[in-house]
Amino acid sequence: MTFIRPCLLLKRYFGSKPNNPKICIVGAGPAGFYAAQHLIKKLKSCEVDIIEKLPVPFGLVRFGVAPDHPEVKNVINTFNKVGENPFVRFLGNVTLGRDVSLRDLQNAYHVVLLTYGAEKSKTLGIPGEHLANCVEARRIVGWYNGLPWDKNLKIDLSKEVVAIFGQGNVAIDVARILLSPVDELKKTDITQYALEALSMSKVKRVFLVGRRGPLQAAYTIKELREMLKLKTCSTIWRAEDFKGVADHIPHLARPKKRITELMLKSLNEPQTPKDKEFRPIFFRSPLSISGSESVEKVVMGINKLEGDNILEQKAVLTDGMEELNAGLIVPSIGYKSIQVDENIPFDGARGLVKNNNFRVNTGLYVSGWLGTGPTGVILTTMSNAFEVAENIIEDIQSEHLAEDAKGGIEDITPILALKNVQTVNWMGWEKINRHEQFEGNKLGKPREKVVDIEKMLAIASS
Image 1 (cartoon, rainbow, N blue to C red):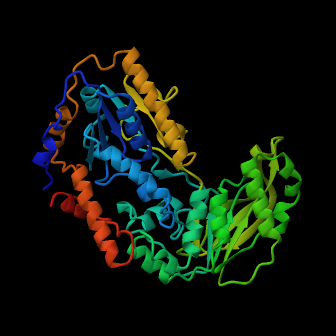
Image 2: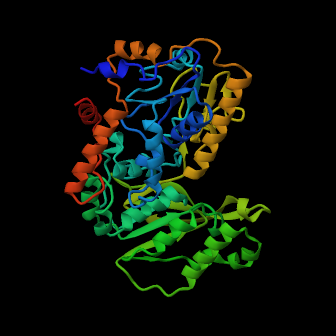
Image 3: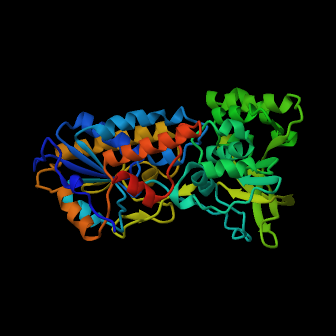
């Protein structure tokens, strides 16, 4: 039976004042923590409660950043300081739209900030996408990063060829994990079950397929450099994809210029045959996937680019087609958010909350991918979260949002108690954290993530 732990019902040691601005942030990822950091720094008297549907915090940093990128996860040190602040309360295992409604939160808080991210994938929308071993990149990332609902992902790595459709950082992350030496991955916080599956993988060649050309590829230079440096993997480009690309280099902005020069340099370097191959290809769109019981082949249309702005040209199908045999197909064409509560003004076509400069309506705001769409990196999310926090501060001061008395968490805990929701506070998360580090130490890893929610709850309440 789930329950509210009595200690979680206690007020903060400093006491809650009726006129303190009470702010609820929905989502404990980077957008939520950065917003909380800015609010408690600039709005001294506010009380911030962060609710999260998982028992553990950090969202995309924990479940999205590749395990071989520990330096990116160092931002957790900043988030820890926020979570430990006496004016901030973490409340894990609470789902908006199931355990509490948006109306409940708006009745209890002066301000509600939605930052619950983008948890669904865009689909290719082509025949055969339903076949076994056509697996979304988002789910593969969740699988090797320990996202509870992806722990039992069915993925067959027994075939040599993988086709990934998409050329963003998520796509290249998946390619790198599939092609990396297992001995290197053993040192990371990758889940043990994923590590075991990868140790038996037969994958030899990964195609990274883009609709447009090299100048429009969305991966960053850091991600590309890592691929080029893989010890047991050759990077093989198609020379015809780069026809005329060098002519544009003098006119490119510095970031795009540097990555284009790196691609051309790699293209022109002699490749030493290695055990595995990374093969980026361009100007191709998937048209259909076929196979008897599992994916076996994808038919791709050949594209041409149209438009005056070289970086924003559109891919247009020609009459040409080609086939690629592949035993695993991975769509990686973007994420989208969902409407978790019927009272959230939501743009279903764009997959984000309707907003005007991140203001939704009086006292309701949105930040991160939920408000912008899935674009940018963690630094982009930080800037956005700070901007939204400034909007909140401005509105509290100019529109007197905090004039009415609000109960905050004291109004929410009875609702959770009636539904027998076991919540996890910051101390509970720290127990889970210590447990993961202890188990990881046994394996020579930074941590071994708990992937079962019931086990998380048991550890947190022990």
